Length: 467
Image (tube, rainbow, N blue to C red; front, side, top):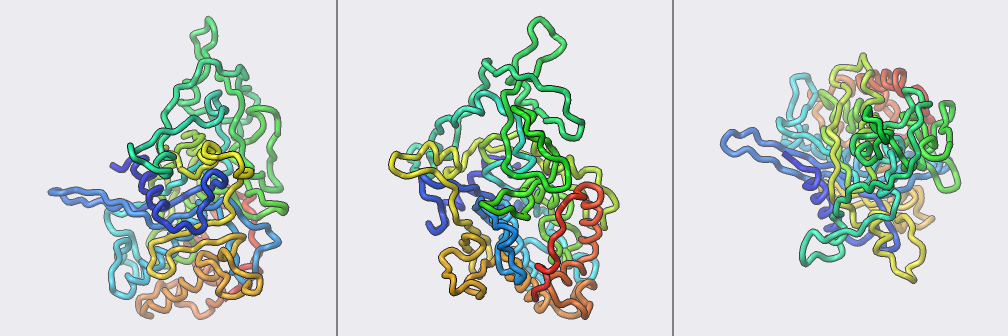
């Protein structure tokens, strides 16, 4: 059994071991951390074991505006930590498949029965970790009095702990009885009314003299900066709990200009149906790859909001292609807080440091042999000059173009006799060609879009024609 605290601590320690480049300035800058962790369970009766390995780490809070997107695929559009971690994991999976098709073996994949297809090794599963609740729908959660106050002080995990250890663990506090009396109104529709989880309900006052049940009293909700997609329902923007509608697709806010990047809640919901491997790697896989467990660090959190945003919205989708399904992850929260969270940065802030801001850089680390560390800002490698823009020197290893080139190297390394049928076509040239040729993935994506996310913005095909 792997606990939430074990996963969180492993991810925090892996982040602490990275070089200083791209990390926030303590006490002045904050960021979010996400990671993909591989769990390998040995079924040996004599000595069963569980191994945990961080495959990919990502930090970041920003994304570029729609006018900055490149038709060459050489700009990293979305640098939120969750997206960075997932893209880094794709780099790792490509490396593992290259090793597998070359006959060198893989700790992740073994050959499936169908020609050219691969499946997970027995006992292998994946955990997704995020130091904070994903932006978008999962972040719309009830706020109790204790949550609306500044974050409580944290205690050290180790007696001789340094700055890193001091930020890890927060003592739990019971909710106070002095809850503001703003009752939940029943005017929301079934699809958009705010869900209140059991932990929140225990914090609210009981109705005086009435034993039929409690009045649920919530002072407010935690809000998300992600905006509802155009063409659909909008947020009511009423005071308190009536500010947001839930269950809606949202795009991430940009600085100055709007973005086309969907919220991390929406992307995680999509990965729970289509898998996190993407359309390109789906060519090689017998079935989609899913996160069996999602762990969130210590922060404002609601189990019911996470389940609503990442699973419930998609649970009724049907007619998916073989190998695809609606995955219901186990949702867990750790008691360990990320030392560079916004709350911890506010606690560590000192006079004279200037105002607290999100860190402008995004860090990617993944367990690959070639360039495991990738630090970016504004969609390009950090520190790149304007003169170098548009060259390979400026490109992140996570941008579409670089991932596409890595995938083409995998195809090149695969013997013709071992190629998946979907890659034997002679009319595959562009990034878009290869994505659309992944027929099972595209069939499942059409079903998900038609039945659950009809308002999901359709990308500009002209931005996918690079080779």
